[in-house]
Image (cartoon, rainbow, N blue to C red; front, side, top):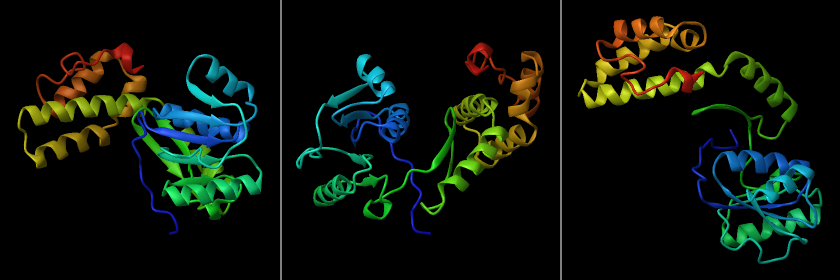
Length: 224
């Protein structure tokens, strides 16, 4: 295993992308979803990146990359397709000890970005270590079909159940049993297919009185 899998909190952190094309656009989109403050360094931007700039989602230095541009960045991405620029970005990032992702030459970088499927707080990732991104995309598509939006809703409900069990000072063993029974009992599928009354009945049967959607502070409309 070449890469160590890790989830990083990027909320409010500065991330620099060198490049303004399709690859930079894809990386920018997921970085914004993670809450990063994204700065693009490129002479021109793709249409979607221009749209992001117009509504204030990103910052833009409208020029080529220059040495010194990476100071203060939390992460760096090079996505220009120009090997000379990629090497320069990788070298400066290494000097600043900033983790870098080099799209066209991954061996020059410190980390790779996997294919992802996101369902609310559920994040599923697939990586081939850069060997064959096509395989990662194929597996991601299978996962995408398998895990629908009901899993985002299920995590919201399970999180609320867990918090209430903690507040009631239920023991660790009891909490695990209740959460396991909710999952094994098909909570995600019930949230997709069943009425509120059926879901409430199931929650009370497994967790006890006081564990309906309303009593957990969850509006059915918010999880559909």
